[in-house]
Length: 263
Figure 1 (tube, helix red, strand yellow):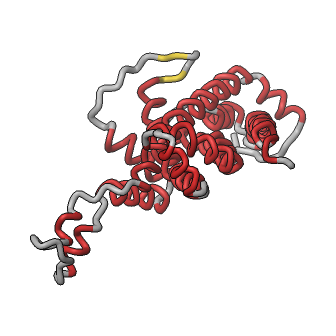
Figure 2: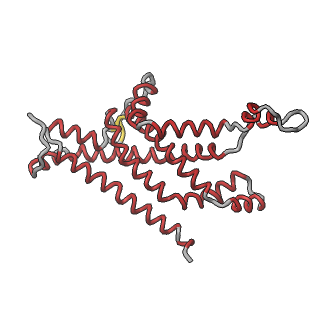
């Protein structure tokens, strides 16, 4: 048989016979996105704090034994080196500058090549040994983008907020947790929402390593019916039903959080 892209009612009828595969794919996509959002946000928060840190372990090299600034430019430059910020910056640049597909293949075929992951199934037909590398790759990629979003949100808060909190006796950790982060998240909520929606859509790439998400169902239906148009339209509708309500829910919380800003 020849693969056809023509769309017809008969084609939808054939594709609908495999609706259980789309349901399993929907469950897998939601699971991928859920774990990616949690792991990616936590990692991004750590990376953002690292990028904004002021830890300079070699700052003593800038001064001589008399307390005067050295003439040696190398030592002065080394005294300004922040290893935490350097590591986080390298991470962000590497993951933002390389394709997600390449990252996914490196994680699956190289990093986890000799790791004996358990092959049990959960939520129906989701295989853990393929699902877990997909979550890792998506989380690492998403964290690089979320890190920059969170960092810009933290830097958007006026420095007087930190000074006022410290004057009240709050530690740096408590200042960040109770004063800075709540305001920063409110400011960057639209950008975070956009990233979350992007995660749902980018999870489709995991079908290339055998994760049984929505696009895996499309490929399976195509192989069984030799039709591609109808399963793609069904997949489009499923993705829309996932992303559109998610965007509206976050817009609702954004409006609720911005009520106090209105005068």
